[in-house]
Length: 170
Image (tube, rainbow, N blue to C red; front, side, top):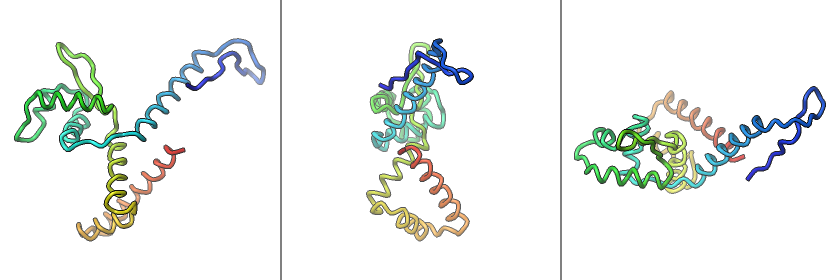
């Protein structure tokens, strides 16, 4: 746990003996939340196809019930108990949380889609392209016959993501 002294504060260049515990505690809480999120991103587990399908519904819908998730899934639809089980697995993996809603619950994602996508793509690049973004981009450019504008947009997005990733690693 991070310890921050709350005994003194600086006011107009002088040290006062009045605590500013509420302000410091707010910063402590913020720091703990950020550290928790960064730690969670680093240990993020991969999702099965079924889990990912449900996460896409949650990312699109936000807070929603199991029945509403089921309604959004394509045919053939799984049984409602199957969807409920997968949502509980997602809770155990810390991708989803819930809040009471009537006699049931509303579920919502606690992992950002962009964060998951970034982690997933890193895994794909590592597993299939030897950690080479260049090889991956080359593969998709050839396979999908990308035009120069699409390629430049993609490269700009990758650069932004890499900058953001480096700031998270610090």
